[in-house]
Image 1: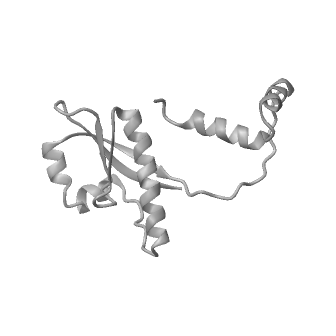
Image 2 (image 1 turned 180 degrees about the vertical axis):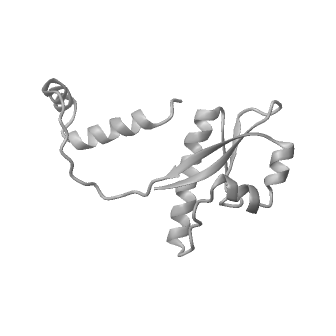
Length: 135
């Protein structure tokens, strides 16, 4: 898992929230609100990293906020001219499924079995939905 700094820009004159990744020049995203912007930021970050990997390009290592303040050429402009929040966006590479043993209430298992044939897929989908930002 890699944790990248993202700048979430808000502007009283613009609708929505913009997102900039100092570690990925030109990689920007946006959303109608913070939760939407965060969801889209995760997607664009994963897309750009996967694209770099597919093209045999190096994926930059995440920098700390202190490094970005010192090294990113646009930091001073952002600090002086924009209203933004610093946050983190995670890149978690897709991995092959791995077997785990979990304990669930037998009534819950019966309810899952009543609506699907693949418990693992059902549980994985439910977890993904539960961990995604609310829309």
